[in-house]
Each structure stands twice: as structure tokens, then as C-alpha cells.
Length: 324
Ligand code: TRP
Ligand code: SF4
Image 1: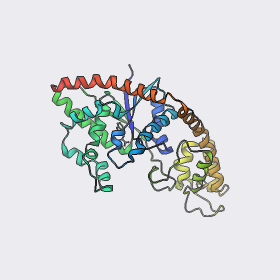
Image 2: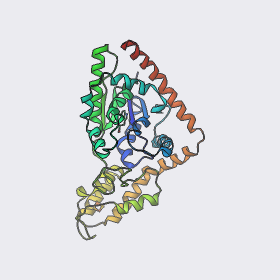
Image 3: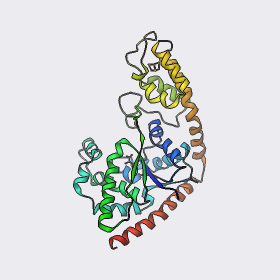
Image 4: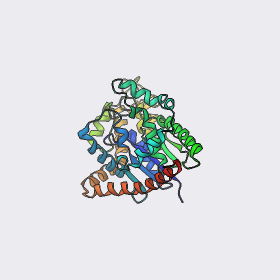
């Protein structure tokens, strides 16, 4: 029997290389080792402002993108959170044992509230309870996440411990698997890559789109002319991109070429572009192929069903334990 792994991603529309390198590519690797559940967390998405007309499309697009990256439905369960109502049922149960002040101290809650002081809704506050429900509903032992989610996993462990203390051993304390050791910075080199900051490269963008974005990517700012030596360790194009896409040999050549002013930044970006396409072109082609597939709604339905089966059993066990 394989150990169980769970992770979630918000349907932000398309995947950029930050999501890909930080999360999805690790999911693809981990799905061989664990019985994996991957969830598109649309209920989490509605805690912050969103476009009502767009959301359904974004959810489907995320599903297709994840498949294109290599999640294999014969190995993993990929599904939509709001289609498995056990998530919100369990979230309610867990909210009844979660201390209010555990939630108000969460960094993400404080950040999101300060971004949107006019709309500090209780969904934003109880967001980590729903996340705990996501994980515990499948009795997952491992949760691959970025560093920014560690506090939420720690809270999940607190909730599980309290539940098991009150009602007897039922839930599993989840452990994080940190997948995002280094944050992938955006093209601006100062902010984490994100859709909303428009400093991203999408995994399904065309060769031309990718190159024109790379041209704008901030390099070692001290290097003004081609004849100036540069420092790759101070260059985001090198740190966030080359290091993730280029071969050891290319990296060595670039280090030397840059430090000794033997290559210019445009040539350097051309090498990067070629290496990025090696990885991303198959994903783009697969994305286009899956998008044309009329059976995609059936695949989504199947994933929802598979998840629901497991979730239903666990929720029944929980209800039994709490006297319902
Ligand atoms: N909160 C996570 C994020 O913002 C997404 C998420 C929701 C999640 N439920 C989860 C991640 C369960 C891991 C496990 O990235
Ligand atoms: Fe960065 Fe490459 Fe330019 Fe050096 S040559 S500063 S590594 S883009």
C-alpha cells in the first residue's frame, strides 16, 4: 500500500513557469511514489475577488494544464474541490474545534486582509480550516507545498492533534514536502512570479511570446554594455531561469562568458529560450491536443467521482466518531 499524498492549487488560469517549477513538476515526480490526490481548490478561490464569468473557464483550463504537465490519471486522482461536498462538510466540523485566535494569527490571513480591508470575509479567516479538511479527508500523510504554506500545514497538524485528542485517533497529522526551496522570481527580478503582477511566462505560450518576454527580463543591472563583465549570481535570468532549464554545460559556458564579457545578454537569453522550448514545447502541444478532446468533461467527472468515494468513507468515519 502506497502512502497518501494531497496537494491543492487555486484556479488562477493557466500555469506559469513559477507554478510549474515550484509545484506541478514536483507533483509529476511524486505521483509515482504516492497514492496522490490533486485538487483544484475553487472554494478557496472565491475568498478573494474574482471574475464570476471567468471562473468556470479557469477551473477547466487548470485541469487541462495540469494534465499537459504530466499528471497521469491512471496514477493520480485530479478533481475539483467544490464537486466533492465532503470538503465543506468536514471544514464545518473542524471549525468547531479550531480556536479563533489560531486563525487570526495566520500570516496569509493578515496579508490578504491588508490588501483588501473592505472585504475581510470570514471565508478568508477560515481558509486554513478548509485546507485542513482537504488534506485530512483523504488521510494524506504528505503535502507538497511552497514555503508560504508551511504555517497552514502546521495549523492542520494542530487541528488534527486536537481532533484526535477529543474524539480518539482518527485523522492523520500531515507532513509538508517543501517543493519550492527557492522562489521563482518574475521577469522584473524583484517579485515572485505571479499572474496578477504580469511578470510571468505561461507554460503554453508560443516561442515568439516567450522570447519577447525574455527580452524584457531584468538581468544583472550592473552590466550596461556588452563589454562590461557581468555576474550571473546577481542575474535573475540566470538564477530563476537558466538554472532550472539549462544543462550543466550551458551553465558553465554562460558563467564564463558572462564574467569575462564574452557573451551578451541577448545571446545568453537565446540559449535560455532554446532550452526552455525543449521543456515547454511538449507541454504546449499536449495542452492543445487535450483542449481539442471532447471528453475532457468526462475526465473531470471521473476524477470527482474517484475523490468523492474516498472522501465519503472518511467523512462517515468522522461523523461516527463525533456522535452524529
Ligand atoms: N492554500 C494553498 C495555496 O495557496 C492551496 C491549497 C488549498 C492547498 N488546499 C490545499 C495546498 C491543500 C496543499 C494542500 O497554495
Ligand atoms: Fe545574466 Fe546572461 Fe546577461 Fe550574464 S549574460 S547578465 S547571466 S543574462
